[in-house]
Length: 96
Image (cartoon, rainbow, N blue to C red; front, side):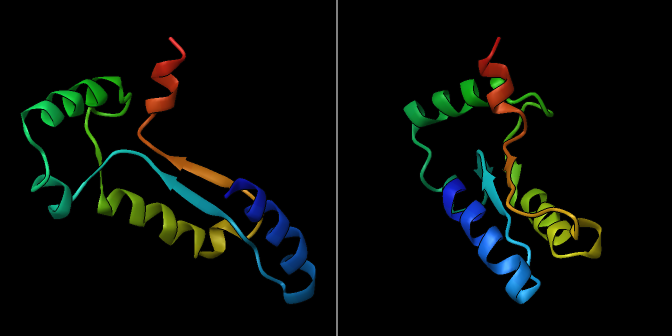
């Protein structure tokens, strides 16, 4: 996905005056995931939440929607070819 994002950013930005960015989401809680947690998965989910540096929780749909909304706004007009990791800092905790 990163490669496609960068390639499309190069191809589409000058010709069509578009920017191309992606959002890669981390753990997300929503109605669909809540139904699928059995006891084993619930323990794994709790371990994952412990590694999330922002509030020790999964992101919600609204958390990710806020990032996408910003990318659609004029405030992000200088961003192009970027993959934003919306994961609550899970990757950061893996580095410790």
